[in-house]
Amino acid sequence: MQKLGTGIVILLLWFLLPGCSGLSVSPGDVMKAPGSQNNEEQVRKLVEDFLPAGAQLIIPRQPADISAIRSANICGNEEKELVAFYKKDYQLGIVILQNINGEWHKAGSVEEIGQDIGYADIKDLNNDKKEELLIGWSGGQGLDGELAIYTWKDNELKLVARQEYEAIAIGDLNGDKKDEFVILGLNRVEDPADYWAKASLFEFRNNSLKLVNEIDIDDYINGYGQVVLGNVSKDQKAVFLDMGIGAHSAYTDILIMENGELKSALTDDNGSATEKTFKAYNRDSLDVNGDGIIEVGLLQEPPGHEQAAMVEIPWIETWHQWDGQSGLVQVVESRWDYFGSYRFTMPEEWLGKVTLKVIDNDDSKRETIFYYIGHTGRERAELLRITTFNQKIWAEQGEKIKQQNPSMIILSTRNGKVQIGNLPSGVTRLKGQDLSEYKKLIIDETELKKGFQIVQPDWQ
Image (cartoon, rainbow, N blue to C red; front, side, top):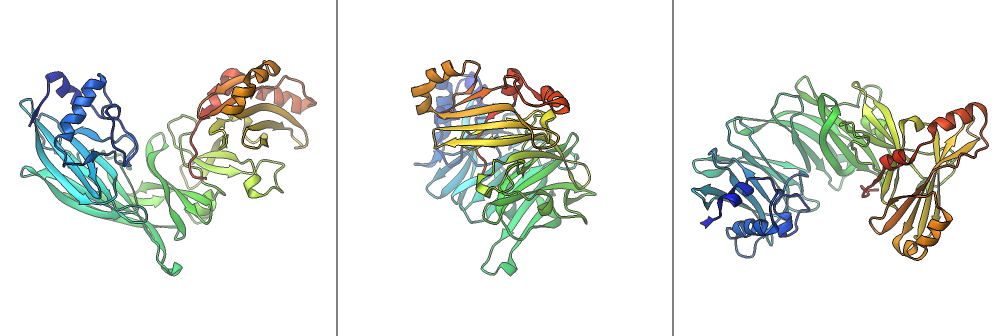
C-alpha cells in the first residue's frame, strides 16, 4: 500500500494528459491538472509501484482524450479509483488502484497478450453509478482488435462482453443518453470474390452487447483510415468513415441512426456514398470552419489545370455538410499545402471564384498564388500569395527578403518552415463587373491570419 498527502489525493482525481500510444510516459505526460512536476512525478511513482517489474505506462491509441492514468468510479464507492495502462514486452495490462483512508491499494487488474491497447474508455453503461472499462486489445497491424467490456462485481473485474473489430466508434448516436457501439469489420482473403466490409450497430443491454443491425460498406476498401463520431448537424450525431480505395484514392461515408437502426446518410437510389464522395486523394473529415459540425472533404481541380497530370494538380479542397437528406452541400473551400504543412481556408465569398498556381523551387521555396477568375474565365487577378521557405534559406536570405518585400506578412515560423503572405497592391487589368466583384473579394491581414493554419498531413 502507498500513502500520499491530501493535496496529492485530490490531484489524482483529475483526468490525465493524452498522447501517443506505445510510448513510455514521462512525468510531464502523466497529469492534466494544475500542480508542480514534482507532484506529477509522485503520482507516476505511486502507480509504477503497483506495476509488474519491467512494465511501462502506455497511452492507448484512442480516443484522443485518453491517457496513461485515469480517474474512475469503477467500484461504485464515494472514493474514485485510478486506472492505469501498461505494457511489458507483449504483455498488456490494466491496474486499478483504490484509496482507502488515504492509503492506495491494488483493487484489481487485467492482463492480455498483444501489441498495444488500441482503444480505452471508461463509461457508466448501465446507469448504476459504476463505470465499465471498455478496452480494445490490439494484436498489431493487419490483425483485428478485440473490444472487451469489464464491470466490477463481487469485488473484482468481470469480463461481460467481447467483440472483434477492425475499427470502432462509441457514443450516443440517437440522443437517448445511452452509448451505441458501431463496430466496423473488414475481411481480406486471397480471393477478391470473398472480400467484405460492414458496419454493425450494437447496444449494451443486461451486461452484454446486442446486435441491432448491419450494413454493407464498399467491399474493395483498403481499410478504415479515420473513424470519428461527431456532429453531422447542430442536433444530430453521426459516424464519419474516411476510407482508402485503390492505389491512393478515398471516399467518405456518414453513418446515422434512423428508426432505431444504423444506415448510410448518403447512399440512396440516386447513388452510393462512394460515387458521391470519391476523391483522388484522401481528406479526413473535420470541422474546418469551426461551426461545430464536421465537414466532408473532397477535391476539385482548379480551372486551367485540365491537362495536368494528377500528381501535378494543385487541388482545391471543397468542404461539404450533410443536407439532412442523402446529399451534401458545399460550405467552404481551402488549400492544403503538404510542403508547408499549412491549410488556408478561403473566405466564403471566394467560393467557386478562385483558381491556383503553384511555383516550386526544389525543396527550398514554394509559392501558392490564389487568383480571382472573372466571369468569362479568361481574366485573372491575384488575391493572395503564400510563400513557404525552408528554415535554412530563410536564415540565409530572410533579411534580404524583408527588405525587398516590406509589405509581406509573416504567418508562421514553425516546423522548420517560414510562411509569408502577400496581399494584392490593387493594380489589375480587370474592368466593369469583374473589377467590381474582385474588389469585394480582397481580404485584409486579419482575414488572412484567420484563414491560415499550420496542420499535419492526413494520409495523402
